[in-house]
Image 1 (cartoon, rainbow, N blue to C red):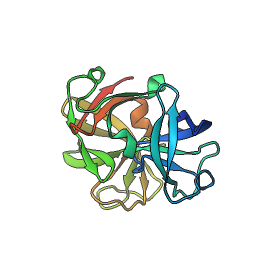
Image 2 (image 1 turned 30 degrees about the vertical axis):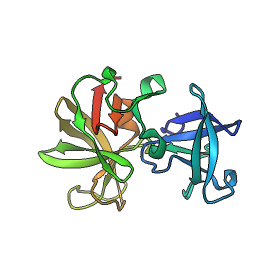
Image 3 (image 1 turned 90 degrees about the vertical axis):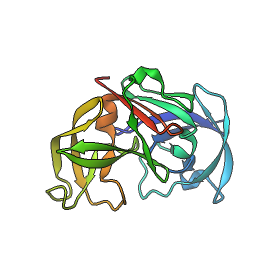
Amino acid sequence: MQKQVPVLKAELDGKPVRLLLDTGGGAALALRHDLISDATQVRQLALQSGKAVQLKAVPWKKASISEGIDGYLGMGWLRQYSLVIDYAHAQLRLHPAGSLAPECGTQTVPLQMLGSLPYVRLTQDAQAVALGLDTGANQNILKTGSRWSGDAGQVLTGLTLQTEGWTGQQNFRLVNVHVPVIDGFLGYEFFAGHLVCMDIQSAKLAIKAGQ
């Protein structure tokens, strides 16, 4: 973890790189501008525990990039797998797509997509809340607006979220963000406290608390 976001060590064309694991990122592979010369190009990426894959890299359009981070690995590539995101053991586990890994339990939640962003509909105070699942977010975020009282920067503590088979309390920071459909993002605090399994192909999510 670096600044409360998960970082994967890998090799890019045989050279070591550090890539943010970003389920909120749409590209398969995005790189800092100094690591990419063309608008798009195919690069060879090898993760520590897997064989090399060929991925099309695009420039990472981010205003500020944390020191030592070379880019991100996003849903353009991750969506072809059934994912187990395990912050407690500092692991991302990849399984064949089509079904959830059993380690998160049998209670599943419908997983939806906004473009390349996976999101889930939960309930908070009897109201439906659509929240993106974003490992690239270093905190839980809610959009400011009529539903949430308070100004940008305020932290709402202990909001109770519910879905079938799971209830959890989370803290959220109010932020001025303009994203349609969804109300906010589940980031570091959520993933740090749960084992999360998601499979885009079967459109299912499973959450196991207390990891």
